[in-house]
Length: 272
Image (cartoon, rainbow, N blue to C red; front, side):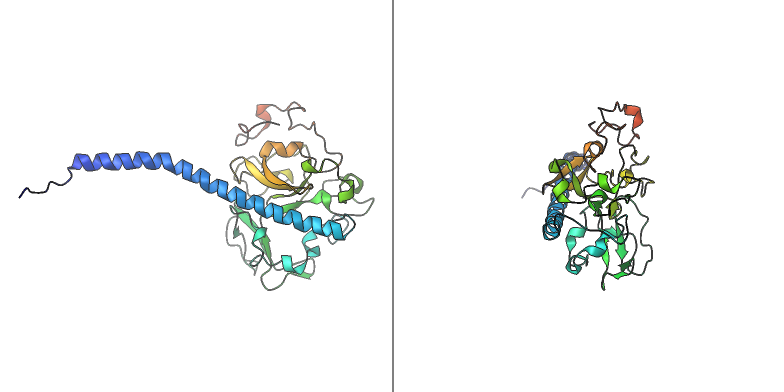
């Protein structure tokens, strides 16, 4: 009977090398598939919130939420209570940003970065959010909030220049409604630059809080026409955030933006 011959060391090394090469080829493809699945899930969340907002507007003469003061702060207080609990309503969370930066007792759990959720908030401006609180990783376009005539949104935009009512919206497919972001309300301005670092946890401006690289150069957004899609980070500057938004702002091709005007991490993404 012939004695069985095992693999030689060289043969084993060749097999290992082949496996390593195959893994090197397959892993990027698997990462792309996983990210595509996350983006699809994120877009589905946006569609859900688009429905919530449209139902609110339909029942309220075209108007969304008002918040607790003349600037529209704490709009989440106006939500139906059934939508508050993040443990029940999973659509609060982008699939790439599901870990809260603090617990329900206010203790910090993580160092905040673009892949963390804001929260957990147990209450806000006197409103109790129930036993589990609110946590999320999305934001409303603050210029949709219904503040009084003569008031100003954060950043100085006049109430009359905000949308405030769905009846006033034109080109709704270009008006952001809900977006991947680092807090639950945003009032971007066209001259606000992205954060200097791709992983910046917070920025001193509202655009920097939604111009974040959660989805490989994109964020997910729902629009006032009910659609939802991925949006390139530089494309954020040519969306109609409010009525008098400058479509030829300093970070647009029409406004003459140059490559060096962008922080390095965003420079090679497509211009708009």
